[in-house]
Amino acid sequence: MTKHVLLNNIDHQHTKVIHQFGAQYGDNLASTLVFPTEFHELQKEYPILARRDEASGQFQAIVLMGFAADENLFLAAEHPSGWDARTIPATIEKGPFLIGFSRSSAQSDEPADPVVHIDMDHPKVIHDHQANQKANQGQPLFLPEGGNSPYLLHISAKLQAIHQGLALSSVMFSAFEQLELLEPVSIEFSLRNGDKRRLIGNYCINQSRLAALRGADLEKLHQSGFLQLAHAMVSSMSNIRDLIERKNRLLAPSAG
Image 1 (cartoon, rainbow, N blue to C red):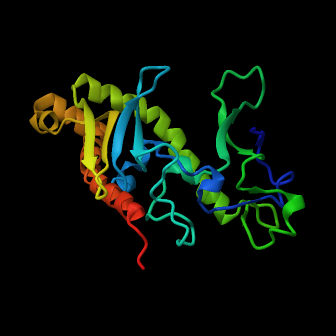
Image 2 (cartoon, rainbow, N blue to C red; image 1 turned 135 degrees about the vertical axis):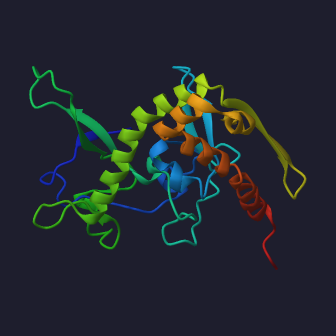
Image 3 (cartoon, rainbow, N blue to C red; image 1 turned 90 degrees about the vertical axis):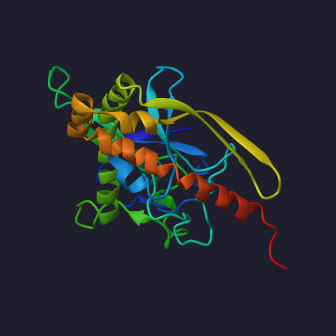
Protein backbone atom coordinates (compact mmCIF):
# COMPACT_ATOMS: atom_id res chain seq x y z
CA MET A 1 0.00 0.00 0.00
CA THR A 2 1.06 3.56 -0.62
CA LYS A 3 -0.27 6.83 0.73
CA HIS A 4 1.20 9.71 -1.23
CA VAL A 5 0.53 13.15 0.24
CA LEU A 6 1.93 16.63 -0.36
CA LEU A 7 4.75 17.28 2.09
CA ASN A 8 4.29 20.37 4.27
CA ASN A 9 5.74 21.74 7.51
CA ILE A 10 2.40 21.72 9.32
CA ASP A 11 1.18 18.14 8.89
CA HIS A 12 4.72 16.73 8.91
CA GLN A 13 6.48 18.95 11.44
CA HIS A 14 7.29 15.93 13.63
CA THR A 15 7.55 13.27 10.93
CA LYS A 16 10.96 11.64 10.60
CA VAL A 17 12.48 9.41 7.94
CA ILE A 18 15.06 6.67 8.43
CA HIS A 19 18.04 7.40 6.21
CA GLN A 20 19.49 3.90 6.30
CA PHE A 21 19.30 1.05 3.85
CA GLY A 22 18.37 -2.60 4.15
CA ALA A 23 16.17 -5.37 2.82
CA GLN A 24 13.58 -4.56 5.49
CA TYR A 25 13.04 -1.21 3.79
CA GLY A 26 12.67 -2.64 0.28
CA ASP A 27 16.22 -1.78 -0.81
CA ASN A 28 17.07 -5.34 -1.85
CA LEU A 29 16.88 -4.61 -5.59
CA ALA A 30 19.17 -6.17 -8.18
CA SER A 31 18.92 -3.05 -10.36
CA THR A 32 17.40 0.40 -10.27
CA LEU A 33 16.66 3.21 -12.70
CA VAL A 34 19.30 5.92 -12.93
CA PHE A 35 19.58 9.14 -14.88
CA PRO A 36 22.24 10.99 -16.91
CA THR A 37 22.47 13.60 -14.15
CA GLU A 38 24.04 10.90 -11.93
CA PHE A 39 26.38 9.16 -14.38
CA HIS A 40 29.52 11.03 -13.35
CA GLU A 41 29.36 9.71 -9.78
CA LEU A 42 27.69 6.35 -10.44
CA GLN A 43 30.33 5.24 -12.95
CA LYS A 44 32.82 4.99 -10.08
CA GLU A 45 30.83 2.28 -8.29
CA TYR A 46 28.25 0.55 -10.52
CA PRO A 47 27.89 -0.92 -14.01
CA ILE A 48 25.60 1.47 -15.95
CA LEU A 49 23.58 -0.37 -18.59
CA ALA A 50 20.50 0.28 -20.69
CA ARG A 51 17.26 -1.68 -20.91
CA ARG A 52 14.15 -1.29 -23.00
CA ASP A 53 11.02 -0.42 -21.07
CA GLU A 54 8.51 -3.20 -21.80
CA ALA A 55 5.55 -0.82 -22.02
CA SER A 56 7.01 2.02 -24.08
CA GLY A 57 9.90 0.31 -25.86
CA GLN A 58 12.10 3.25 -24.88
CA PHE A 59 15.60 2.81 -23.50
CA GLN A 60 16.21 3.53 -19.82
CA ALA A 61 19.47 3.54 -17.87
CA ILE A 62 19.92 1.21 -14.92
CA VAL A 63 22.71 0.29 -12.57
CA LEU A 64 23.34 -3.34 -11.76
CA MET A 65 23.52 -4.10 -8.03
CA GLY A 66 23.04 -7.87 -7.95
CA PHE A 67 22.68 -10.98 -10.11
CA ALA A 68 19.44 -12.47 -8.78
CA ALA A 69 16.00 -11.25 -7.80
CA ASP A 70 15.99 -9.41 -4.46
CA GLU A 71 19.81 -9.40 -4.36
CA ASN A 72 21.55 -6.11 -3.68
CA LEU A 73 25.25 -6.72 -3.12
CA PHE A 74 25.78 -3.16 -1.86
CA LEU A 75 23.65 -3.71 1.24
CA ALA A 76 25.96 -4.22 4.21
CA ALA A 77 24.67 -4.27 7.77
CA GLU A 78 28.17 -3.56 9.14
CA HIS A 79 28.14 -0.10 7.57
CA PRO A 80 26.42 2.66 9.57
CA SER A 81 24.18 3.53 6.63
CA GLY A 82 23.68 -0.09 5.60
CA TRP A 83 25.18 0.68 2.16
CA ASP A 84 28.70 -0.14 1.01
CA ALA A 85 29.47 2.50 -1.63
CA ARG A 86 30.48 6.14 -1.79
CA THR A 87 27.39 7.16 -3.74
CA ILE A 88 23.84 5.83 -3.82
CA PRO A 89 21.48 5.94 -6.82
CA ALA A 90 18.89 8.69 -6.39
CA THR A 91 15.96 6.32 -6.89
CA ILE A 92 17.19 4.38 -3.84
CA GLU A 93 18.33 7.27 -1.69
CA LYS A 94 15.09 9.23 -2.09
CA GLY A 95 13.31 6.64 0.06
CA PRO A 96 9.64 7.53 0.58
CA PHE A 97 9.80 10.80 -1.34
CA LEU A 98 8.66 11.48 -4.88
CA ILE A 99 7.92 14.38 -7.17
CA GLY A 100 4.36 15.53 -7.74
CA PHE A 101 3.06 18.49 -9.70
CA SER A 102 0.73 21.31 -8.77
CA ARG A 103 -0.75 24.35 -10.53
CA SER A 104 -1.61 27.64 -8.90
CA SER A 105 -5.11 27.30 -10.38
CA ALA A 106 -7.03 24.63 -12.25
CA GLN A 107 -7.51 26.98 -15.21
CA SER A 108 -3.84 27.90 -15.52
CA ASP A 109 -2.12 27.01 -18.80
CA GLU A 110 1.33 27.32 -17.26
CA PRO A 111 3.37 24.16 -16.68
CA ALA A 112 2.74 22.50 -13.34
CA ASP A 113 5.37 23.13 -10.67
CA PRO A 114 7.23 20.13 -9.22
CA VAL A 115 6.51 19.62 -5.51
CA VAL A 116 7.65 17.04 -2.97
CA HIS A 117 5.29 14.25 -1.94
CA ILE A 118 5.86 11.59 0.68
CA ASP A 119 4.54 8.04 0.97
CA MET A 120 3.32 7.90 4.56
CA ASP A 121 3.02 4.09 4.39
CA HIS A 122 6.70 3.63 3.49
CA PRO A 123 8.64 1.54 6.06
CA LYS A 124 11.24 4.32 6.50
CA VAL A 125 8.64 6.84 7.71
CA ILE A 126 8.39 7.39 11.47
CA HIS A 127 4.97 8.79 12.38
CA ASP A 128 4.21 11.08 15.31
CA HIS A 129 2.76 8.23 17.37
CA GLN A 130 6.00 6.26 16.93
CA ALA A 131 8.22 9.09 18.13
CA ASN A 132 8.64 7.79 21.70
CA GLN A 133 9.69 4.22 20.86
CA LYS A 134 11.89 5.44 17.97
CA ALA A 135 13.25 8.57 19.63
CA ASN A 136 16.80 8.04 18.42
CA GLN A 137 15.91 7.04 14.88
CA GLY A 138 15.21 8.99 11.74
CA GLN A 139 16.00 12.37 10.26
CA PRO A 140 13.69 15.36 10.87
CA LEU A 141 12.19 16.92 7.76
CA PHE A 142 11.73 20.42 9.13
CA LEU A 143 13.51 22.71 11.54
CA PRO A 144 11.67 23.81 14.71
CA GLU A 145 10.92 27.19 13.12
CA GLY A 146 9.48 25.47 10.03
CA GLY A 147 12.30 25.62 7.46
CA ASN A 148 13.55 22.58 5.58
CA SER A 149 16.06 20.43 7.43
CA PRO A 150 19.51 19.66 5.91
CA TYR A 151 18.25 16.13 5.25
CA LEU A 152 15.21 17.35 3.32
CA LEU A 153 17.39 19.74 1.32
CA HIS A 154 19.62 16.78 0.41
CA ILE A 155 16.63 14.70 -0.67
CA SER A 156 15.20 17.62 -2.65
CA ALA A 157 18.46 17.77 -4.61
CA LYS A 158 18.15 14.05 -5.38
CA LEU A 159 14.56 14.53 -6.55
CA GLN A 160 15.66 17.44 -8.73
CA ALA A 161 18.33 15.22 -10.32
CA ILE A 162 15.63 12.64 -11.09
CA HIS A 163 13.25 15.28 -12.47
CA GLN A 164 15.90 16.79 -14.76
CA GLY A 165 17.30 13.39 -15.65
CA LEU A 166 13.94 12.05 -16.83
CA ALA A 167 13.74 14.63 -19.62
CA LEU A 168 17.43 14.32 -20.50
CA SER A 169 17.38 10.53 -20.65
CA SER A 170 15.02 10.20 -23.61
CA VAL A 171 16.99 12.78 -25.63
CA MET A 172 20.29 11.08 -24.82
CA PHE A 173 19.12 7.62 -25.82
CA SER A 174 17.56 9.00 -28.99
CA ALA A 175 20.98 10.39 -29.92
CA PHE A 176 22.66 7.08 -29.08
CA GLU A 177 20.15 5.17 -31.24
CA GLN A 178 20.57 7.51 -34.20
CA LEU A 179 24.31 6.86 -34.14
CA GLU A 180 23.78 3.11 -33.54
CA LEU A 181 25.88 3.23 -30.38
CA LEU A 182 23.77 0.78 -28.37
CA GLU A 183 24.26 -2.97 -28.66
CA PRO A 184 22.92 -5.96 -26.70
CA VAL A 185 25.35 -7.34 -24.16
CA SER A 186 25.42 -10.80 -22.61
CA ILE A 187 27.22 -10.87 -19.27
CA GLU A 188 28.62 -14.33 -18.61
CA PHE A 189 30.85 -15.35 -15.72
CA SER A 190 31.68 -18.16 -13.30
CA LEU A 191 31.74 -17.80 -9.54
CA ARG A 192 34.39 -19.38 -7.34
CA ASN A 193 31.93 -22.05 -6.21
CA GLY A 194 31.56 -23.20 -9.81
CA ASP A 195 28.19 -21.61 -10.52
CA LYS A 196 27.88 -20.14 -13.99
CA ARG A 197 25.75 -17.03 -14.56
CA ARG A 198 24.47 -15.35 -17.70
CA LEU A 199 22.62 -12.04 -17.77
CA ILE A 200 20.72 -10.99 -20.88
CA GLY A 201 18.35 -8.20 -21.80
CA ASN A 202 20.84 -5.39 -21.25
CA TYR A 203 22.51 -3.00 -23.67
CA CYS A 204 25.83 -1.20 -23.54
CA ILE A 205 27.74 1.31 -25.65
CA ASN A 206 29.52 -0.17 -28.66
CA GLN A 207 33.06 1.06 -28.03
CA SER A 208 34.24 0.58 -31.61
CA ARG A 209 31.42 2.70 -33.04
CA LEU A 210 31.97 5.34 -30.37
CA ALA A 211 35.68 5.52 -31.16
CA ALA A 212 34.96 5.71 -34.90
CA LEU A 213 32.74 8.80 -34.67
CA ARG A 214 34.04 11.70 -36.72
CA GLY A 215 33.05 15.14 -37.93
CA ALA A 216 29.55 16.47 -37.36
CA ASP A 217 28.33 13.38 -35.49
CA LEU A 218 31.17 13.58 -32.98
CA GLU A 219 30.83 17.34 -32.57
CA LYS A 220 27.07 17.15 -32.02
CA LEU A 221 27.44 14.42 -29.42
CA HIS A 222 30.16 16.39 -27.66
CA GLN A 223 28.26 19.69 -27.66
CA SER A 224 25.16 18.03 -26.21
CA GLY A 225 27.19 16.52 -23.35
CA PHE A 226 26.22 13.02 -24.43
CA LEU A 227 29.74 12.06 -25.50
CA GLN A 228 30.89 12.28 -21.88
CA LEU A 229 27.85 10.25 -20.78
CA ALA A 230 28.60 7.55 -23.35
CA HIS A 231 32.17 7.33 -22.06
CA ALA A 232 30.83 7.15 -18.50
CA MET A 233 28.76 4.10 -19.46
CA VAL A 234 31.80 2.50 -21.08
CA SER A 235 33.99 3.22 -18.06
CA SER A 236 31.39 1.83 -15.67
CA MET A 237 31.55 -1.65 -17.20
CA SER A 238 34.78 -2.34 -15.29
CA ASN A 239 32.64 -2.38 -12.13
CA ILE A 240 31.15 -5.72 -13.17
CA ARG A 241 34.35 -7.37 -11.90
CA ASP A 242 33.86 -5.73 -8.51
CA LEU A 243 30.25 -6.88 -8.42
CA ILE A 244 31.32 -10.46 -9.13
CA GLU A 245 33.86 -10.24 -6.30
CA ARG A 246 31.14 -9.00 -3.95
CA LYS A 247 29.11 -12.07 -4.87
CA ASN A 248 32.10 -14.36 -4.34
CA ARG A 249 32.69 -12.89 -0.87
CA LEU A 250 29.04 -13.43 -0.02
CA LEU A 251 29.27 -17.09 -1.03
CA ALA A 252 32.59 -17.69 0.72
CA PRO A 253 32.31 -19.83 3.88
CA SER A 254 32.79 -17.92 7.10
CA ALA A 255 36.27 -18.08 8.54
CA GLY A 256 36.59 -20.61 11.32
